[in-house]
Length: 245
Length: 244
Image (cartoon, rainbow over all chains, first blue to last red; front, side):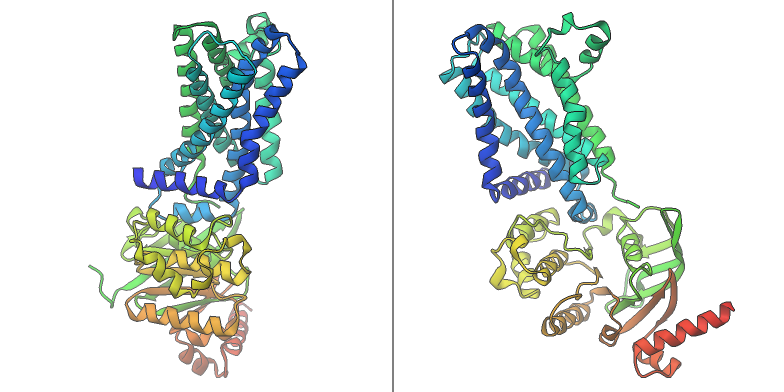
């Protein structure tokens, strides 16, 4: 592994994105439009907006980065550039971390805009530090990137890669506590939601909103999400094979 | 230590299985250093598999395979070999120069190597064009340029001249010979037999086996045919007689 190569990968991924201004615009605008829609739906009912806002701030970066990364990596695999890179002095960690850094930075921009809008204009009430919402959102995005990198190994076409979203992400959305509080779920489902990373991401957002301090629950949730990131990146590295059939 | 008398590539009884089928069925040959060697054979005969084994990205390889005195795929070889796949493997959404700069960083090649590589493949006028908007021939030249970054001692080129116009093809072959003159070992595959005469040495392949390993001239004399296509046919007929 070398920091110089890791950085080169990150810069390259961002450069590729820069040649695609429509994707950049959608990455930044779509979450804002959806959050505004939510605020408008519950016209005047701040309590409901305050309940749904934070989980959604956790969901958007996760889902978007999952999709973007799984398609980008699949492209890298099918275009032969991955094979070429692996025949060069490129460490697998360089590639994975490069992607994580690049998409983490994109997520930072996305989260800053979304948090700025919900807290600044739409009046989301947050007892904890507002910047902490952004930190949690970026961590969620990196989680999405890491999982996307991993599952792209199991997709042969872009159609398949996109299908992993409903297959792996939607169950987490249903069970993360957004619709039904996790402790009110049937036991089996609660147990399932206990091993899903998104549950902890949403919990972290809710903790920031509720508490004015960095609580131990918040610290623990962040740690769990970070643990999932490391695990997914490690699994992702295992799927990058220099020698293929 | 390597010197020019040692072959750059040494292969002994190489077998490769793909999807339950043996696609390379026992190859033994040497590739001399500092020469342009052509790997010729019809499409599907195993040329690409052989090249992938050589650069260490092929699974299920049995037998001996050494490049520059090290086992094929060794970590130390990654900086000393240039590999071009058949389909252009560059990023379609980056410009030629951005692609080359990225790969140059990965290879620790100096910034001047980018300009030199662009000049080698004659893409100066398109250096700042996005690869996805270039023609097929232009993007495969961009892919070739990546392999020329740094100073590879062995170049493995999978059909780099297919679909290019004759002038460009001539220029690229001249480039391969220029590189070989500086000591670079160039292994070029092609399914077009009339490219054979541009090589100093030929490996003729068919159905996972080696038909011949010789100079173009010796092949023509041995088979009594005026061109390599004829020589190939004669050798195929001979080998089938032996089987019968």
